[in-house]
Length: 406
Image (cartoon, rainbow, N blue to C red):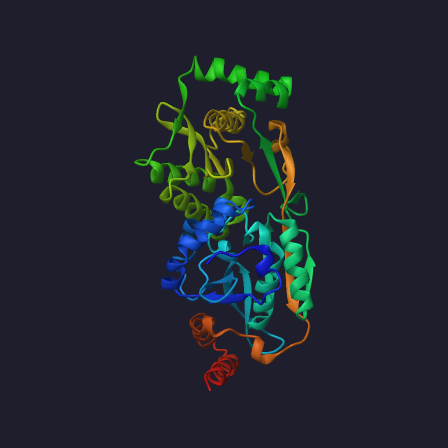
């Protein structure tokens, strides 16, 4: 069915909740059609990427799909969601909390897919539907679509919720993780060096090429399909060696595992870019990226370098090499992603802001606190309560689930 703004603007829209793999797979053609139409999308909102986020995470996700009417083939708005079960100590019961669906795969950017002609109507319809579903807290971090985020929050507030946009500072308050330094790329690398990088920085790069690359046998290597997994593991091994003491073994292993999931997912869909710098077969350093070919962006995800490699310019050399590769392969943006660390601006990066909002219901409603989609996760938590000897909490939790089924 075809529709236009004049026939749809004031009509009641149909919003469905998709939470089975079969329905999600069937949605792919309409999802990809909307993806191709949306000027504010990214690889992290593609069907293929979200499919990898959802795979293996049964009952932890759903998708809100807005159509002009039930059965309409074309879609106006899509919002992928992630679910988690939280035990409320104040109310002694399980609550459902919702995040952006892409965060099941630690996506760098989240947000909404919208048809540009129906952006506001689609977002308002999705918000109205979401307000009818059971949850107590909704948060979306790293939304790279300010206008859409504000439309969505306003619509939820009109449906009885309270929203707030928040800051997100890390590294003891020294780094703003909602600023994403990005380098706009010209048509050739020499223009980039001449116009976007300081003379001192250019000289260091050219000196590195003369002394390390041309005279000392240091070489760049690009991971291929055959050795991508090995390259990822080597990068993360070096990352662990650098950060394990600072972060603690448990945290460092968890973060490294998340990085591995992201890079392997990029590899599986042909969007991994992983250059390394080597000498006599030894990896001095490497960078992992996710490519967004449709939008012309190269997203830097993680760096790993040999802690015993003495040259302080190794990391910078890898970024210069990556920017050169990006330009030569037709990309228009080199994205350092989250965090306004100083070094990123030495490559000519300029800040792009992303947004983080949290929404809660203003009035408590026991029937809108817990979604049955989280029953399996809740049962796992009950088992943990019993193992910890907290039988009173386990009893209250079982009673809540029993009431849900009655």
